[in-house]
Image (tube, rainbow, N blue to C red; front, side):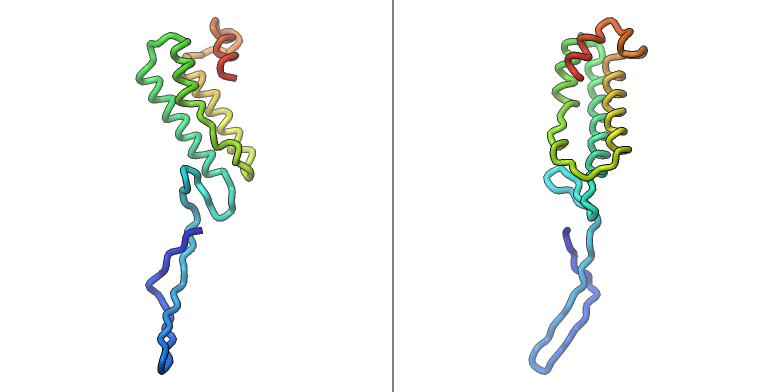
Length: 133
């Protein structure tokens, strides 16, 4: 973890030597190369960050490319929303956070492709389902 020194210190002085001992502060979490690392070595914070980014990217795509065809939307969704490169290094996570990521992905697909009914009833559902799932 990263340590910062505090101005509170203990001074030990000798006739010849002068020592200053500073106590460190432990930082509970920090971002390293785009990943959140915390004291418990849990990946829950990183997964929550990924959920926020997925919603944000999907909303940007909805705002900008709402009127495009399904093939263009598939390409855009694959490029901007399906970048799960760091999933392979997640080791310690809770099942509730992982279920939130799954439901977030399903909500984003439904929002971007305007799927209001169950995915089996949608006319182009087979093409979307085979391309994304």
